[in-house]
Image (cartoon, rainbow over all chains, first blue to last red; front, top):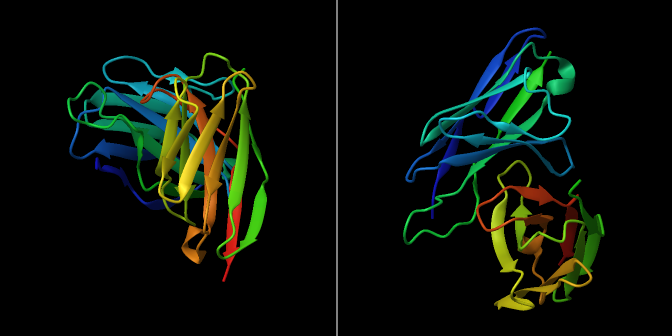
Length: 119
Length: 112
C-alpha cells in the first residue's frame, strides 16, 4: 500500500508561536492532499484541500490566515498553525491519494497524525 | 452544507455477535462511501468502501450496504472478535480520492 508520513509526530509550543507540520507521500505522487483535525473522542473534521502548485481550498469556518497550507511539490504539503493558542491543541492528520497513477488503488491514505499541544 | 450522521456513538457486543453501524448523508451527489477503523492514537485505516452503483459489498466478515434513495449506508461486522474493538468512521465523498466528509464515529467494544 501507499505510505504517508507526518513530521513531527507531536509538538508542544507556547501560545503565540507558529508551528509547521509536514505531510509527505513516500512512494507516490499526490497532486492533492487533505488536512483534518481531530479532537479527543471526536470525528475527523476536514480543514482544507491542498493542491500542488495552487492555493488550498478551505472548508467553511476554517481561517485561512491562521492555518497556512503550502503544497510545494508532488510529495509534500505543509500546514502552519500561526499564532497558536491553547484552543488549537488537537490531533492534525493529513491524507493523500495516488490519483492518476496506474495500478494504484485510489483510496485515501492517512498519515500517522501530529499531536499539537499549545501551552 | 454536506453532512454525515452516524449512529450509534457507542456499541458494545459480545464476542461472536454481529455489529451494525448506520450512516446517513445529505448530499445526493455523493457517490463514494468508505468505512475506516481507527485505533486509539493511530491513523484511520480503510476497511471497506462502496460506490453508488453498487448496493452491497462484502469482504469476509465485513459488509456494507447502500440505499441511495434513502441516502443511507450501513456497516455490518459478523462474528465479532475482541480485536475488532476500535472507533469506526463512515464517510461520504465525490469519487474515490476526492474530499471526504466523516460521520461522528462509533466506538465499538467487543467483550470476550
